[in-house]
Image (cartoon, rainbow, N blue to C red; front, top):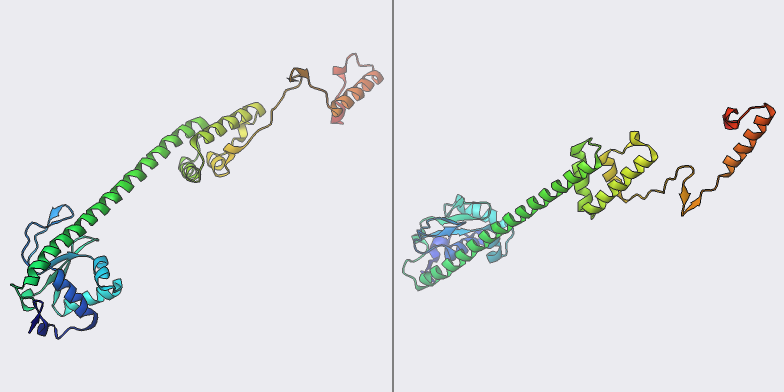
Length: 271
């Protein structure tokens, strides 16, 4: 006795999830040979009883979990109902063994399902191809971004001048950029830092470039350093209280010791 072209008496050994999964395979597999089927941009000849599908597709059809579907396919393979051939990580070919024992060749339903199957498999194939292209585009974007970071880092490396620990400095620079810092802000911060080092004469105490980046020292602001006798806004700078006291003490000592000039008098602060 058959129903919709399926010989039900041949399914007596199956029950539960294995039966449900097998019926979906029967209904969706190729019901005629298709020697020119395209999968992932290559020809994969399919015979009657073959079906290229995936675990996500079977989940969608059955509402079972990944593990339940994998277990059902394993049990069907052990019973020699279905053979499995993994084509890629995204698709696998299932083959119904001796399909003529389960499905009538001349059933009208078989012809209708073959047309639906072709559309369904081509749709799946297009989705897999699109996903592959999307992944390639994402990889290209990541590579371009990495190249831009390395190009900007080389500019930073040359501008900073103190070339120690390039590898950790690259990691620190990349982290700074990913956290929102701009290349221009970092370079401007390097210039301010170098001017500060030159003005204060601290060339022997330059920060390691990795430290400069990790501590976000490009955001530092430095006070204006003035030399003695410099003017501020056109006005001479006023001597400090300490300088005034030093001059008075030095003048008194010069008088007491009859020094001919203040330059001959020792500095009171060294006593």
